[in-house]
Amino acid sequence: MSEHGPHTTDDGRTYLFDDPKNVDRFVNGFYVVCVVLVILDFVVHRHISHRWENLWAFHALYGFGACWMLVVIAKQMRRVLMRDEDYYDGD
Image (cartoon, rainbow, N blue to C red; front, top):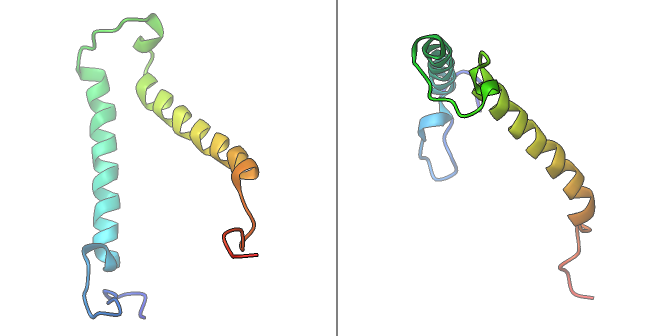
């Protein structure tokens, strides 16, 4: 497989995100949406319930922190829930 062109699967089909250019376009579009949302944070009036919601980028930081906590908790849960590779094999 080449690193610069679209990749094909075993059945010969090419999907949207197989082409690295499409992945770059998606990521750049995501960045544009993030910048627009940060700019809108200064313009749009929010109806807040708590005074800490009035902090700049509160919702973005809260969402980032929540996702970070999910990853940390999932890593700890993996230690408890993980089974051996041959767990489901017969005895």
